[in-house]
Amino acid sequence: MTVTAVIVAGGSGERFGSQGGKQLAMLAGRPVLAWSVAAFEASDLVGAIVVVAHPERVAEYGEAARSGKLSAVVGGGKTRQLSVAAGLAAASEDSDVIAVHDGARPLVTSATIDGAVRALQGRPDIAGVVVGHPQFDTVKRVGDDDEVLETVDRRDLWIAQTPQVFRASGLLDAYRRAEEEGLAGTDDASLVERAGGKVMMLSGPRENIKVTVPEDLVVAEAVLQARMRGPAR
Image (cartoon, rainbow, N blue to C red; front, top):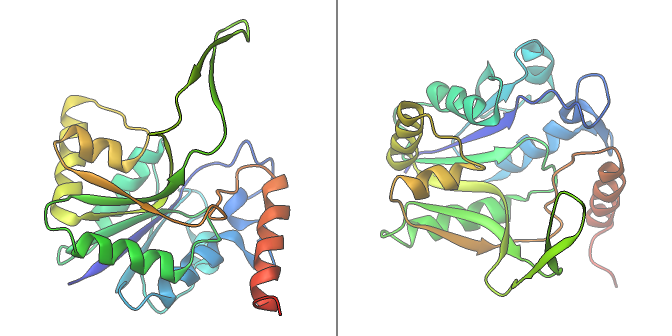
């Protein structure tokens, strides 16, 4: 089985407010993107890595993403969906499984990646596996005037993260259909679901956060420092 990782780092990072965007921000001595790539490089199940970069920063992102498994660095599109499509186009046609990951999630581990791939392998009836965790906080639906309209029942709600791992044929078909029908999904799994594929959730660490604003680097740095120190004695 050939597993290819598509790591999406093509956003402009406007909310982050730093030149080069969040993927090139330094975190514990390395760019954020480098931590994400390193986790996939350490996975025994992943054979190749495709990085999707901001089209004007392909060389910089390629330098940050150095890896023996790196097969391509390509420019992304105006939306995340278009960027993933660019990554899929650059993936080997021999890929059986595609793992899509946000380059701005530097705390992902190879254990989480391998767990998602193995979960997909163990369920021939499903098209994909999404790493995430149950919604623990209270969720409220709010109107335009900031008035609370409803407190949502959270019992069946999960927070979706990445990686999201799919059988390559199903993911490619879902993206083809989305392009033909002009559909936009909030994540890759939503497109596979619309195409009729069954997707399961896999519980993963809550610390697998996405770096969106500078304050998130403080949290990520603390987690990485704790990992480096090892388990408490």
